[in-house]
Length: 96
Image (cartoon, rainbow, N blue to C red):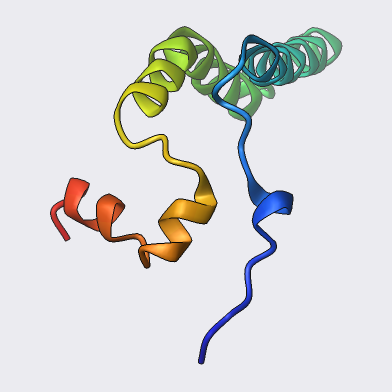
């Protein structure tokens, strides 16, 4: 069964500074929300799941710029090109 993909709707903006800003801002906002929840709960023993999630979000923030650069420099082709080639470049890159 073939699915039609709305390419414009799922396209990721990783090629511009504004796009990179949007991703960074999103993860900073997530970090702030988690910090606020942890502060509100006060007790670290009941905040453990939020603390674990905060650690993960901080790791994402630390690695985000490198990830965006990797995507841009390596296999960051537009989704339409991947779809047209039936994702052959990505599957070759992942050695699938």
